[in-house]
Length: 224
Image (tube, rainbow, N blue to C red):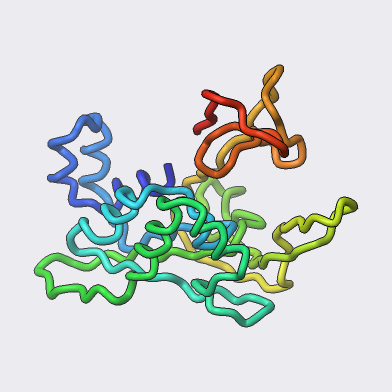
């Protein structure tokens, strides 16, 4: 959903008129003065929930935009696109994740041609989560305070390693005039289907095939 919203805000309104978008939305977008869009992700590039096609269309198929990956303050002083060992395992587990990461890695390497129309910026920022929205008490958001996070691994009682995000102690304030929240959902348990209460997710192998810790369940898939 976040990518769809960014695409609508950044795309030329005349090209949107040929789609099934409502005429009311088109008329509002004609008044748009949007110059910069931020995509804020709580996790890192290896966990980005998108398809390669969606990402390519957003980053490289819209005219007059300049995409970039924002350098995020992190406690380990690492490059935001640098993968941990576990990240590398995640993106190698499926072709989709690997291609999404490869597409993100091209950002900044594609030269923006000189255009007659004004350039709009698309900034992608990982490892950040909103702490509070400012100005809403007066009826209009003016800024969002972002807390920067990083991965931390802890050993469980069964000696497995659990990974979670922890605050780095650093935060920044981002001026803005519009916020669109796209925060996902929690799956509900279904009788007979393996379920992880801690993460509120159906257990699956990364491709959607539902499984228990010891075996897969034939013919049963989860998607969202």
